[in-house]
Structures are given as C-alpha cells and as structure tokens.
Figure 1: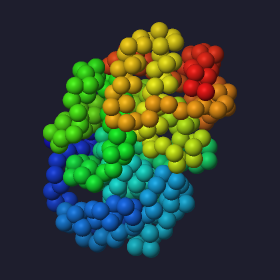
Figure 2: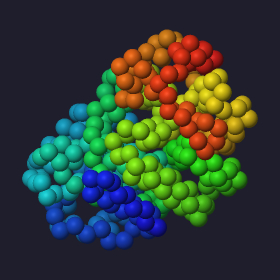
Figure 3: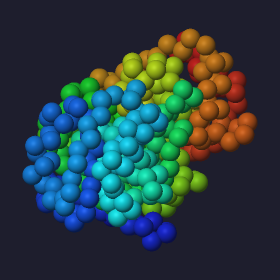
Length: 345
C-alpha cells in the first residue's frame, strides 16, 4: 500500500507500507542506526540498499541520547565522509533515530535529503511521517528541531518481529491516540480486533498513516489541525521530562497523558465517563501504564509553558470531544487543570 503526502509547497513523497524492495540511490549516503538495530537487522537492510557509496553510523540506543551532542556526532560523520548537498541520510531505527537523522539532514550544509526506514511500531505509525525532526534538552522534549520532510518512508512490518512487547504497546498508544481524536469507527475496530496478526497490524498502520497524511497535507507546520496529533502529549512531555526519559517509553507517557487529558474533558463536559473508560480499557488491554504520581501540581502546570504549543501566557490544550472528535483550546481554566492534576497526586 502507498499513502501519498502532498504539501502546498510542491513537496510530495510516498509512504510505502509493504515488504521492502530494492532502494536505489546513485549517490553518497550515510545510514544512521543504533546498536540494537545494527545487531538485529543490518544484514537484512543491506540486501535492499543499492547505494553508490554507503557508510554506516551506529549510535547508542535510548531517548537519553536524543541530544545536540549526538547531532554533532552525526554531522561529524557526514563531514568526515565528505557528504555534499546531493548526498543522502538514511534513518534506520525508531523515532529517536528518525528525529535525529532528519534534524541532522535539515542543517547539514543548510539541508540535504533523507529517507525513513522505521523499525518500531511507534515510528511506523507516527514519528516517521510528517517531517517533524528534533532533539530534547533539559527544558523539554523536541524543543530544538525543524520541519524537514523525507524523500520517502519505507514501512516493513518484518522489523516488528523482534520488537519487545513493551515497545509494541508503546506504538499502539499512538494508534489509539489517532482513533480517539479522528475516527470513531477505527476506535471501535480497535476495541473489537487485536493486533496479534500481520493482517490486522498492516490495517492499523495503514489507517494511522492515512489519518496522519491527511492532517499533514492540510497543515504541515502545525498552525491548526496538526496540533491535534499532540493529544496526550502536553501532559506526556512533562512526565517524560520529570522522569529524565528513563521511566516510560514515549507511547507509555502518551497513554498516561491521554487519560489525564480525558479527565479534563470530563470536567468541562466534552466527554462522558463511559467514553473515557473505553479509552482506558483499550490502553490496559495492551498493558500501557494508566497511572502516574504527580508530586507537585503547580510545578507540573508550570512545565506546560515550555511546551511548543503554548503561546505567551496561554497554554493550548488538545482534548478529545467524545470519541472520534477533538477540540483545541487555550481557554481552559487553570483551576480546572490543577484540580485534575491533584487527582493524580
């Protein structure tokens, strides 16, 4: 299956969801991966890469390495191997590798091409599509970055065969996120079908990519509807920052963030308790965490102002409106948010 991304500035590319075929580039390229993917899948990917001059950069594995220091490592490798403006970077890994490789591509010699070959479910359904790139710093997640679209995205479910169950569930969280906010029928399908076979996994990936593609096509730079893809993330990013990116996988934090957001929706009348319970039950069925102890509600709230979605003194909240719909608001009262945060204390 091919999902086409077409942006207003004449940028377009395909997301190919199928077993890999030959990937052919008559140019110099660097494949950026991590030590885990290197040991599991490097021989497999080499069979499908026909590159004129390919070098491989293997990074350490983990969200804690998603930093400017690692970007410097990628850039140095590019300089040492004399890449030029017509060269190519290949992101071969999960969301961390994709985000960092894309960001390095966006700034190397003011911008070169890159492609995405995502190996985790989370990256396949979300992180690899749409051109968001970046790194974390001490102030928060993905606060340094750029919009830089790939030349293509190649999604092969073969890579999921070695994915730990926890990593798989982390990706399911992002699938649920899109269903809750954009497609009630898809949410009902997820309630009635398990992602324990290739046919269902491919369907869920294709539906998620189609949803994201339609959103990105309408709003590449997140001026409007694309912000909805951050449902659960405003809370999740604070959780990740508070736990130094070591306690929860990204999708796990997003799952908790969705539940906190849903409690806000209940408080202001956008969602009923039964709908929120259905979301929670679906998350629980994939063993995604559903609780987090907020030690200081005021401090947690203050972290929102470092979020990219905040504007001056207003915090933009993405909230589910029932199932299959959403609202974007910067007028949620602080006392309502604090009240919900205290329920998680």
